[in-house]
View 1: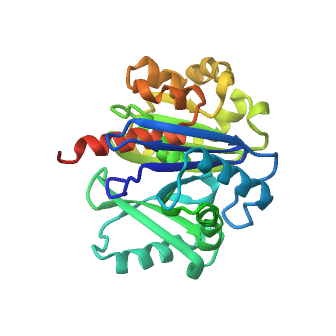
View 2 (view 1 turned 45 degrees about the vertical axis):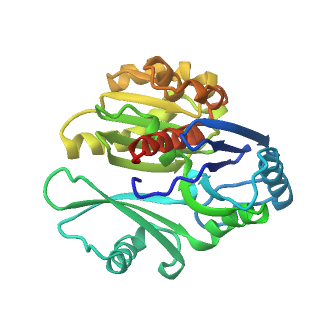
Length: 310
């Protein structure tokens, strides 16, 4: 993610709402806006049409950006997690040239995605491997689906410069000094990711049998176990903390059962950020609305702003 541009405007698109924020040059929150969507207006999918009610979604996008007085600017689009398939792959050798690397990833992962290679968008980044070789985080998406979301921004007079899943953006909220598992619910999907010292060790996005309102701790544990077990087998250590996202006030119901089964501290993503003193004061409005994708992008932008020469 270090190579990503960081425009001062971002939009997080979720099945239930459109949210957008603008930041100052120093990374502080300038202003933000949220607009609710009618049920079923967006149905996230890697292959099927996502914008089911175009009129309602376009109206919400126009309203949000109108409040921010945003026109003719670059914008980051944080899209629902099911839109982009994310993989962590290990290679003994990996090409330096993007012209060779992207076709290799298309070929290796063609049986893991439900769309044809010729309509597949590929993005990737290298990260530190556990042992020898090269580890690559790859994101694959169907071009037609990504264009649905880009067209929303373009219709509002904006230029989509970065397209990222909201949970990948939210990963920057984790304190990854130890192996930390994020379990984040959005609509009818659950994203489970494990990070450890700036390394994405595992990632999985699944469709839930029930929405967040009907999810139980037992159902969540069933979904979390595969990524947790993979991490323990591959890295030869257990998960050391768990953070829950997208559960709102219901997060408290899950903490006790998960701590008992996983034998490590469990807390809400935003609540833990506040308790650890890592939440910027000007980011509190985003935290209050649990806009985890925008909050994570703000954290990322702030860290990159600090890293740039003055």
